[in-house]
Length: 140
Image 1 (spheres, one colour):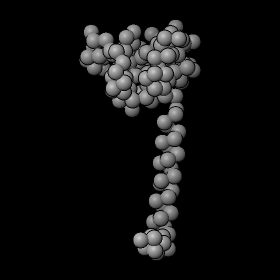
Image 2 (cartoon, helix red, strand yellow):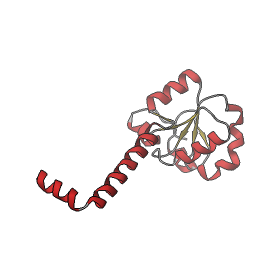
Image 3 (cartoon, rainbow, N blue to C red):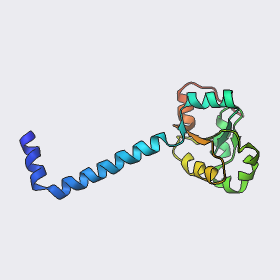
Image 4 (cartoon, rainbow, N blue to C red):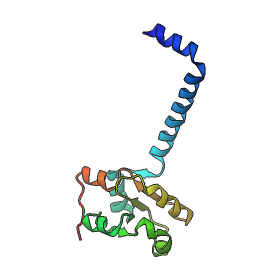
């Protein structure tokens, strides 16, 4: 088996090189994005309790009403640009951006950082992770 692998590498150096390049780029991307401004549910709870963090839920109103973190503000991502001024008085506090699965909060986080929210972070895994961890949600 190892002999076949060595023969393959020797016979297809461009293919193996391209694979290694893509693999390296993918690993670097995953490492960079996994730690980039993201907090776990327990870290978010600590920020909320100890530093009075503001939770910004960027899901649409229907999803927000179905269940959200207590005290969260609903600023749907589609209207974030026009409603960003509502958060200006919280620039000195931590801001936690929450979406459904933790994937779309990165764009909203970038807008907040650009607007001067230096302590803005996103919730890793979003509301689905929050609920999977058994943390409370408010339904209104």
